[in-house]
Amino acid sequence: MSQQLRHARVRKTYEFIKSHQRQFPVAVQCRVLQVAPSGYYAWLKKPVSDRGLEDARLLRLIRASYTASQGIYGAPRVFLDLREAGRGLQQAPRRASHAGVRLAGVARLSHTTLDCEEARSAHPEPPDTSPRRC
Figure 1 (cartoon, rainbow, N blue to C red):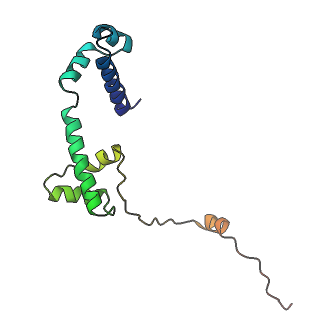
Figure 2 (cartoon, one colour):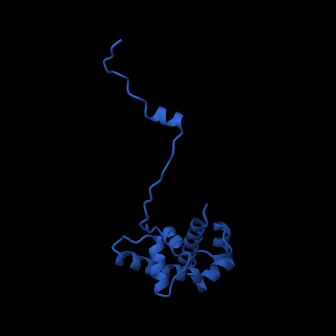
């Protein structure tokens, strides 16, 4: 299970515990749902981490840059755009991709070379149908 999925599962578990704390003791719910009570109480004090807040802020900036470019900018240009605004982070493109934002990429041509055998098998010579005098 990826770390993101695990955090989402734990967050939903904490939300469940909070919504049912009048019906069942928190300690019992934590034991049954296999989460630490200390983690639940820490989550109550601060449900969104500093990194989560920074990621959300950065994602807003990435989306604004992307829409301002009418969906043309790719990750390198979005990064430069954010850096020009004084908010550039090296992780910006990666965080955008984790959040599901598809930045346009640059399509580069790839050149491949074939050796003689591969070229012959890929493009066989047509049969010789020219009339000949013998």
